[in-house]
Amino acid sequence: MNLIPIRDYVNGCSSYIIGDEISGKAMVIDPLRSIGHKNYVISAAKERLYIEVVVDTHVHADHYSAARELAEEIGIHVSMSENAPNDFQFNKLWDGQVISLGNLEIVVMHALGHTPDNLALKIIDRSRSSEVVSVFTGDSLFVGDVGRPDLVYESEEMIKNAINDQYNTIFKKLLVLPDYVEIFPAHSGSSSCGGLFLSPKFNSTIGYERRFNQFLRVKSFEEFSDMVIKTLKPPPVNAKSIREWNLGRSIELYRGNSQ
Ligand SMILES: [Fe+2]
Image 1 (cartoon, rainbow, N blue to C red):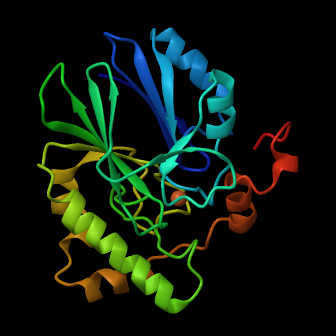
Image 2 (image 1 turned 45 degrees about the vertical axis):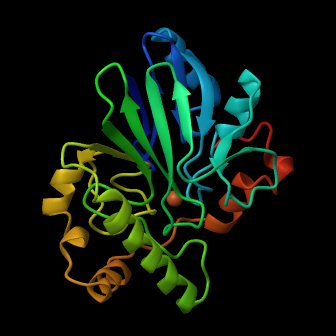
């Protein structure tokens, strides 16, 4: 497996190209408009990889996604959760779906909490083993932190339900993975999608987070929920309008506006 991380350090956003070096087939995860969609094509080509799938792990509210432009450039549709309320045509991914790229198998997992459409992608590299080697967690489990629950939901009750979803995603779906599994989240450091404990480090393992991530050491849901609420940072600037744009509802800004 070839893995190329591409990061926007100012906004704390991480995107990734993952590819099978034998077949040359590759997927881009969470491409960033601040990087520019053509740079993903170039970075992949330098490694003799050809992008076949473009995934956004969720509808982002903190940055503009380059997924639509990148997908259009190579003549495909963006792939996102079937729960994403997009206003544009996209491939709908379901829980348990397997995407094959040569020796790579990408297993789609609904990982609700941060948003109702957040995905985690488990990676199996068949050239090495039939076990999961890595998981791209989107905004569920971060390094040292967890994704915030309040960017989409408005009422207190909805936020409480979202925290409950995040708790179930982390404890029932991610922490059942073996300690050696690597995690690659969508954010780190300065990102406003996490809380006060978000590490500037962009990857970790399930085992390290199990031991040292404070949110994973709680004794109850109530403790988890209190910690999430108490460690929230201010929301991203222009979260609502960025999200609208990423949903495809502000077409007039779609072309020629790079941010
Ligand atoms: Fe997010």
